[in-house]
Image 1: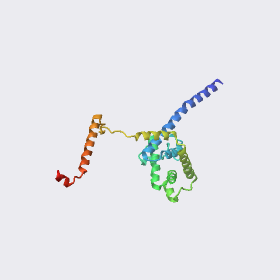
Image 2: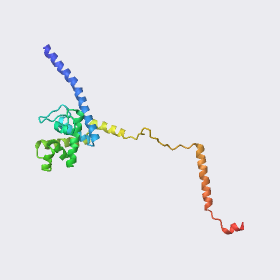
Image 3: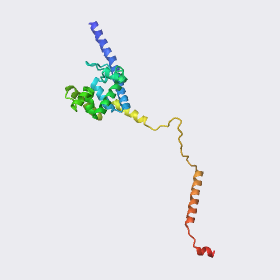
Image 4: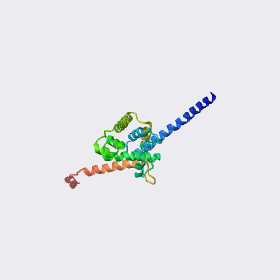
Amino acid sequence: MKKLLLVTITLVLMLCVQNPSSATDVRTVKATIVKHAIELGVDPALALSIARTESGFRHSARSCHGAVGVFQLMPSTARRMGLNPYSLNDNVKGGILYYKRMYKMFGSTELALAAYNAGPAKVKKYRKVPPYRETKRFVKKIMTDYNHQKSHPEPVLAAAKKKHVATKTVTVKKNQIVKVAPVPTKVETSVQEASAIKAEVIEQSADVSVPTESVAAI
């Protein structure tokens, strides 16, 4: 009885310890996805939806077909891209780059997702989302999640947006000379006003025409 109790307590403690770690890992994965998506010009919300559908943000995920990592990259595909699919950064970067390549090829989010799942050859063959149950489910699930995020964005997206806005604030480059117009003192202001009045008087005097007869009479 005591032995069973000790085993139970040990298992509970192990679960309690693992949960924070798992949560931290997921946050790290999401932050990595958002970072690379922004850098590569892909909507980070869509990138998150792809990763959620592919692996549930688990970098340890492996498929029966040999795909690995967060974006379920095939090692051969990753190698052709010069990336290591077992590295989190490379896997995320490779997945986003591959989607971006498919989008450039087909010009449609849904077709790009279909090509991501079934391959570009199948999309070219059918000229639409291929009639495969898995591919249709894949596209629908991602698009549903993506549309949901528009009204309920991930916290990591809000944080990234805030950081992005902060980096866009105007900064002075190193060694750049900024010229600032001097603020005139009271004395300078008085001199400037007097000069302006004098100039106005001279200008008005120049506009007054004196009759020739009067000049002659003088």
